[in-house]
Image (tube, rainbow, N blue to C red):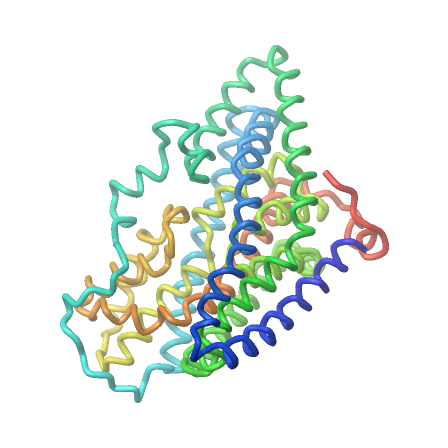
Length: 424
């Protein structure tokens, strides 16, 4: 099967990247060759991510606009929206709370006892992505062309919803246009299949560059913190899967298996966006109709980043532990509520989790410079966050489809296991 073969190639590229990066770092540290190697080979990853990003804007717009236009009346759209955001808010709260509980239980920062720097010491991380003004700027586009050029997913979603509603209002007169727009989404998914053949090369380059630049020691420097976070992420996976099983039953395990390729891709590239096209394709194979999947997934990329939200509470408490700063239960609960708001709608902000954490630290008189403590290993943590975001959004899509009674009862999974899945 093509997807299984590609998954094996990606895993092989990951292992080879670690080995080659270690060799280059060992040989080229003194001459500076390792740094130059890391910079040059990273170009392969950049090319791959650019090719993926060129697909996202037209794919999100086409699938969502067609989905809205064919969904039915405004009552149906409103009902789907309420169910979607109800699930998102519930999982957001669960992710934040679990991060708080796990860092309190595992205490990865206890005993470090670093001297506390000035609270005003800068981390170098801009906080311009937070606040009501910037949130609204990320919601409503001034120009759809500008939003597409910058891959502002939430802005594209807003425009596509209006576009789809207007098309639905026109009725039969718009049917031919939306059939052509639907064909655009199929073309973009075909391009995705072509681009994905380059994925193993991109994964090899990404991992090799990080190891070559920092050495294998980067994996051990913050071993306790990383192991504690990965244990917490695995716990979050269990929570997400268990929550999904309450609606989907045992078939949630089939869905997780079908999502393995986008999960591996998101993990190795540390990019949820890179996995979007394949995630959309796989949830549709699972049985979620396009009109549901094309609505829930794009919105989830801004409002349902489970891994990123868990990281916000986990990292904030970790930094407080490192400096020996105690936070009362009241402060921790206030922080949780604050992050529920500030973590929404910033998917387009570079290093979004670090932006939110930097803003949160200053609010609770924790040195903002503490962000620098986790900056060195943030890439490895972002790998787990990105994969978790993909898992959460994939299950959310299937859950909403099930609630709507439109989740197809098919054996697409068993068919995929033996034959190549049909392309969209």
